[in-house]
Structure formats: structure tokens, C-alpha cells
Image (cartoon, rainbow, N blue to C red):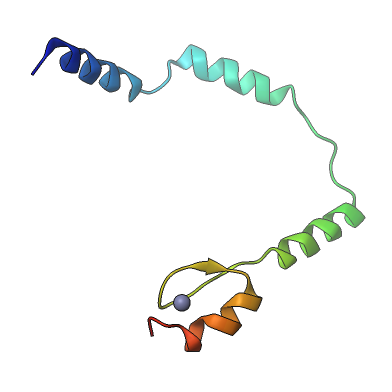
Length: 82
Ligand SMILES: [Zn+2]
């Protein structure tokens, strides 16, 4: 094994380590500073609808994630891999 490869290995081992507590604290403080106003009921309703429209389905035969329109047209009971 070349020394470069060993260096790379050591670097990767370091990268896999958890962040220091100081680092984590800094991040928490930054997140705390970004407080958002609570959403209004109207906004919540809009978000619910948007999430509903974006709903995806997974074909149980080929495990592709699709919108319901394509799922019922080409997958599920009509899947090629069935
Ligand atoms: Zn399928």
C-alpha cells in the first residue's frame, strides 16, 4: 500500500468522527436564532394540500416511486415486472 493511500485512509477515519461538542453547540445556537413565526391556519391548510398533491407511490413490483397517475397507468397490477 502506498503512503498516499494510508494518508487517505487516515483522513477518512477522521472525517467519520463525530463533531466536537463545541461545534455542535455553535450549530444549535445558529438554529435557535432562526425562529420562525407560527404558521396561520390558512397557510397550514395550503401546505397540507400541497403535500397531498405531491404524494408519491411506490410500485410494489419494481419499487419505482411514481405519482399516483403513473402508478395506476403503468404500475401496480399493470407492472411489467409483475
Ligand atoms: Zn412497477
